[in-house]
Every structure is written in structure tokens, then in C-alpha cells.
Length: 366
Image 1 (cartoon, rainbow, N blue to C red):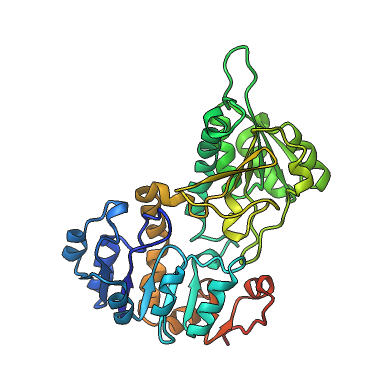
Image 2: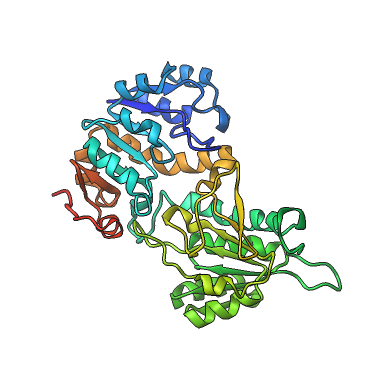
């Protein structure tokens, strides 16, 4: 099969779909790999390394998309790339279609087959291709939030860990999954006071088992969230509905009760965000202030640590890329967990959660 690895063009996105080692695995199996020049530089992979691995380097994205049957990316196609897509292609990448009807319609109009990293499952009910980026985003969320809390960045001027004689900052984590547990780990490591809120008692038990009583836990309710926000210095939005829109857990009324200069880091922004006032931002302009609260809503947080993120992502995706390269229909037929990643096929939405979020009919692949 002919496989294409384009250079990502989303704002400050430095990750790459495959590193040279993965290209080498594909070439050794008889596949032809095209890599756009400069695609891996931001992640520490030079063009020469791709050439040595057996890839064909091309300059223009049009040339790459025209040549490839399977496109392996990191982020969803940007509007500038929509015209490159065609019906006989397979696209394997993060899509996050629920809050992005423009992209959804572009994929449907192209008629291609689109498989989303974020809805591929595993035998344990997890999301193995989302997990490594969730781990990174969870850890980065506290790092970013601590920076935003600095007075020069619009924050309250609070040091999360405090100092002797001064109380630490209060971090509220909404969601006890992969993002939430990693955010909790970093926040506790910095010496903050942490409260984790989730509707799943099992998830809260796992937090307690891992961190003991250092992390307070609350069962999610409108009242519990509202009460916790009042004295929060930093709020981490870490909720996920696979394929669907994130629930709006923080209303504008709740926002009005938060202290001026407090910070919300909405990691759920890829799925629309969990705060009514959240809107996607970029690494170039990561924050805005609404009702006195600093909002950090960067939609591709792990792109800032591209070397680490690309290595973690490639380790998870490469086995699936190798399977798809032998034929996507065969791969999905043999692996129901990979089949769960199918979002779009032949001009229709094939994932129930995505279809529901977009208000479109669902036509699963038989």
C-alpha cells in the first residue's frame, strides 16, 4: 500500500504521524511510504532519517495526498487540506468530529474512510490511542495552569505549592480518568491541595487507592461542582464522552462565583469543552479572560512537547497502521476494537456517538 505522512499545519503542531522507525517497519513489509519534507523536524526526526528508512520525500502536500492511499496524521485535516481528500483514501488520525461540523461535512463530501484515534477501543474498555496524549495533557494541564496563575499572565498571583507559612493553592479536577489522574499526580507533586470530582465511584476509588487521602474526592453533582469552584485557584476540565460532546459542567453562573484571577484549563476542548465559556485557543494565543477568570483552552496541548508526544503516540498507533496497510477492510473485520475507530465511510457517519453529537443519522459499516 502507498502510505502518506504529511507535515502538520495546525497552529504550533510539531508532532508527526510516523517516525522513521515506523516508516522502516512499513517499508520492510513491502509498502511504499511518502513523507512530506520537514514533517518530522519539530519532533526531532530529520528528512535524512526518513530517506534512510526508505521513504520517498515530497515537497508539496498535494503531491503527497495524490500519491497516498492511507494518510497517517496527528491532527484533523485543516480547511486548507480538505481539497486534497478523495473517496479512495483512508485517513487515520485524531478527528474529534463532535464539535466540528465543518470538518465532518468535508469528510462526508470527500467520501473517504476516516478512522479516528480517539474512538479506537481495547479489550478493557479503554481508549489506547487517546491514552498517551491524555496522560501528557493531564500532566501539562497543571504546568500550564501554574503559569497562568502568575500575576503577569492575568492570574491571582498564587504559587500552587505555597511556602512555609502560606497555604497552597487549591486545584479542582473535574474527571478522574486518564487526564484527571495525571493532573492530580502533578498537582500533588507540586504541593497543591487537590479535589477530584467524578460521577463514577469506581473512578474515585482508584484515585483514593493511588493517592490516599492527599486527594479529596467528591461525587459529581451540580451542587458539589458549584461549591468547589468558589475557592478554586485552578480548575482542570478532564471529562470525556467518547465520540461525543463534553458535558458543560461549568455554567456561566458558576463562573461568576469564581475568584478573579483563578484559572480554568479545559483539556476537554477537543470535544467542545466542559465549560460554557470555553472556546478553542492556540499555542500562539493560549488564553483569554472572561468574567475575571483566565481560560486556557489549547486544542493540541501535547503538540508543545512534540518529541515526547510523538514517541508515545507512535508506540500506540504503529501496530494499527501496520494492520491497515494490509487492507483496511480486513483490518477492521479482524479487530473489532480498531473497527470502533471508524467514524466516516462512503459519505455517512459510522459511529453512533459522533452521529448523535452532530445530529446526523448513523450508518455503521456492516
